[in-house]
Length: 131
Image (cartoon, rainbow, N blue to C red):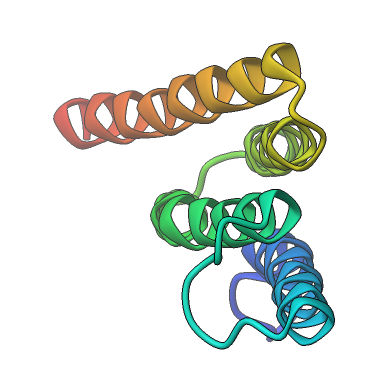
């Protein structure tokens, strides 16, 4: 076993934070091009970029904390990769929907994000009660 702590959570934290950084750059790009320093100024692409960034910033920390708790409590690597990968894909789907005004990918991304986080909570509670 590697001495590195939480290697699987690290992968999904790095992926989601990388996406968050790209979205921050997108917000900055729209702010500079539209000369808007605060808020969205009614500029649709800027408003969408702000919400895509904010929404990922609101949801990713909770999912990553749950994933880390699962990893620390010895859940199987395949479970962690499935949940971390599926959550990351759900967030990409959601941000795609926000940025392109595609309701289906936005809704599916939001729905699967909540389902996955709820599943992580459920699995942790089952493990807590069973041990």
